[in-house]
Image 1 (cartoon, rainbow, N blue to C red):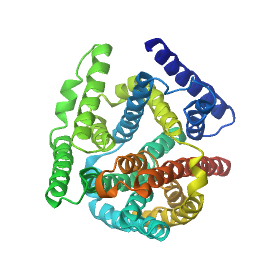
Image 2 (image 1 turned 60 degrees about the vertical axis):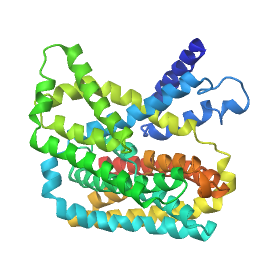
Image 3 (image 1 turned 45 degrees about the vertical axis):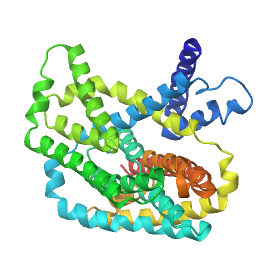
Image 4 (image 1 turned 180 degrees about the vertical axis):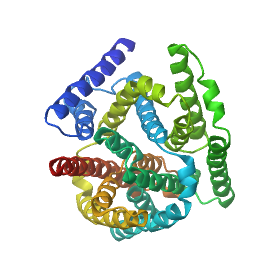
Length: 398
């Protein structure tokens, strides 16, 4: 079994290299290609016709799932490197205002979900799926397009931080209800408090004691430097997951801490290859767990939600960017980038699939996950293709 698992992993990496080359040749984003090749090589692609497919062995499946988590972790770490917690504090009023406007994106999902299923829990799950933009997809797109140091990138990151904090509270509440079989107010409050305390402590350490991170990486050995930096990122991100917090937000703040250190350039040079490898595995994993036949049962819901939430997210993001004094072109970039959905929406899908007790209905455990993975695939492709198109327009104008 170990030999077969190694072959599966080899197939994943080779396939990523091939489609990345194709994407580079035609000057398109590689993200949709990674997702599509994941579908083709997974259980819902060649797995329907062959006994060999990627993810067939538990070992390979576990490696890809863990690799996907590492991909999210590295993507957000690198975005944190180019960000400043002082800027976050300085812009706290704007972030609160824009984030509050962004909360309106729960509304279309809740309304559409209730219209189709007449179920409040299903409605709030769909609301969460459509609310949260993908930190992973957006961060990779920004880095690939060279927009990571632009004013609009700062605005997107600040908005994503607000969304991530909101989703921490959301997931704490929903997981307690779905996995606990009901609404235990004490358990919900406890989970939310633990999650927020972790985030607050992390922010305080990054802001008040950034020199701690400098000292840990102060070594002349390149090998030790890599081991120490990856160890810190993974350990803190892992601790966040254990406490019910996304590894993404933890990695983001660790990136902020390292970004203020003298080792920033070295981190970018040595860890960037890891970021690219595991980010590719993350998007491959999205495709691997997506069953294209799911589109058949939920296509009316999917079409209406894609159209409605794309327009709604674009306009709330576009006008929110105006509070940062961004021009029309930059605001358009923000609006289009925020369209993408990804890892957090899939976390909500997995949560729904594991529901127990009174919430373990066909709508919650089957239809909501089916909708979420289909929605993520469509929105990630729409968002990245539009961003690539806007980037080409910018180059032509230049």
